[in-house]
Length: 217
Length: 346
Image (cartoon, rainbow over all chains, first blue to last red; front, side):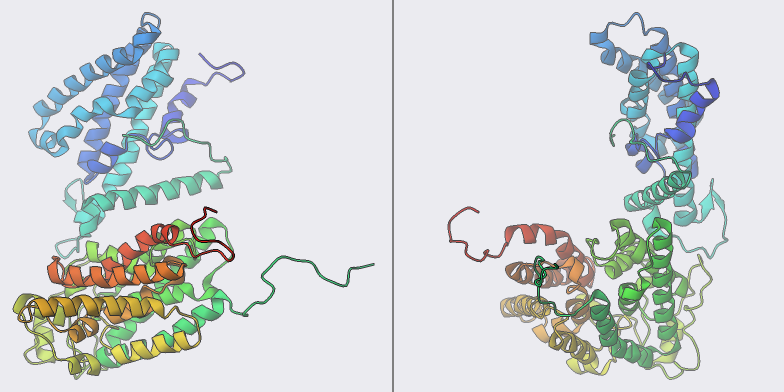
């Protein structure tokens, strides 16, 4: 359902919203907690991105299907229950697939439930759009989140450990940048990517649109 | 008919001082220190100073281009950042790490805030703090001053390939100076309770960063800037005075454990920090009372970190902490406005 006076987006455009124009990490600056905390290595970052995408896809689909049945007054509670269900699924799934990864991600898997990208999508998009459109948008957002996390994780792993996906890139003499695997490194790398993205968007000619939502969780 | 009197707002009398002129004089005051560092440590120190300064200038140029602003290289401030940063690094610091420090100094310390005058922290110290966190081993690897072959060969770590760890040079350093332990005077005091005599600092023989052991030249450079009124003399006086007072109080309390104030003033980077970094115009308070509070805070925090912290040296973090408090200090120490009666609210 498009707003009055607004052109209905094609499915490809809907998909590309999250990947580029409204990228959750680089444009909306949402979900900063997991972004900064688990992006120490590329594997952790991608796993976190995929887990979030799964929850995002499942919950938006269900929210969109139930959008006419849920009374306005209890919608947030309903969304949270739906999201929590999918988070529980993904929590057990990761524990079953790789215990090592499960321990590396720690509490941040359970904390997907409060990731504001997911609640934001449910509230701002899925509750107003039919299932197929909501799912397309969620997939794009999920992919955008994966790209954002991977961009941070890759840089931090390359500079902080000289590896990518655990494979040594520079041989045994590599000098690790200790700061990159520490929390400040996450902020430095995120700042660098934000600078690059904003600069690219400005060069493209598109005036910087204010991000929807706030910097949060 | 055109009015014979030109109407305009104050200021009506200007001193004819520009940013560029002040900065050029600071560079002038720094050059003797750089020259002495090169004389002490030879080719490696020269290469480090040139590399760090060149990276700072290139980074400044790059961010100017990225932001679409006119170039600001001609105001000399990036050159000062580069020289100061190089002087706070150990002479054996690999050049590629020096380049990283220079980039971080301008990018994180200055460009992110919007350029000269907008920066909250001293850019040179931001660069040093970054490499201190990134390369903790290399930034505490010291070499002896006045090594015999210093103008014939580079220190082995200088030309480490980018991204690679520098080789271990403890054997080389021992060969260059017999009995060299690789500990700075502050580390010797902290871990072995051994106080270095003051003449080692004055002659430049003490183990330290490239520009830290030249107390006389630093003071002369500072005096030159003060005499030309390009520097607020109260800041170095407050920093050094409060550090000396704190050290004196501790020595009174337990003379066996704490060193004399002279050692505290001369060792480490306190002189360089007090004269050239705490006095950075963009990152120090503007109110007369605020300047004293700011300086005293830096001096006392430095002594506290040295005596009770995990690190041997605390000048860098003391100044960065002082920088962070500048807006607060300025807000609480407004000078009395002319004509204002005490006790009335404006």
